[in-house]
Length: 151
Image (cartoon, rainbow, N blue to C red; front, side, top):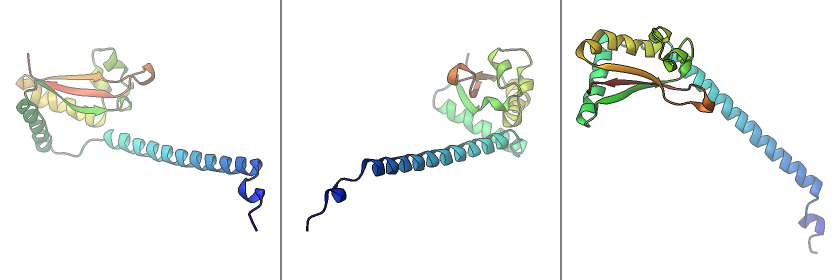
């Protein structure tokens, strides 16, 4: 006996229900992934907002390695760090406006980098620049830290 038409062509109502279930599964998976990504981002920001725990010697060695690599590649500046604007007490507003005292808005590792520059690199002629490097939706986003030594 050959299959009936009901076996070959499912009912449209049943297909709509199955499609809706698949869409709900996709939405649940997307929400789960988005929540996981947001949790990772919060954990990263939390970690970056605290001191690195590195000794002065370790920080100097790291800076030396980064600078020497850039020099070997013929560069006169190098972006040494990128961080979310939420690590500034004003979300990067003072940096974006180039206000005097902008460095007082830094926290965590970005603040450590500025202090390292102040203590060790500035006296040796290096310059530092903190600037907004992206504007998602037209608002300040991540901030880049660049060390330079060229003219």
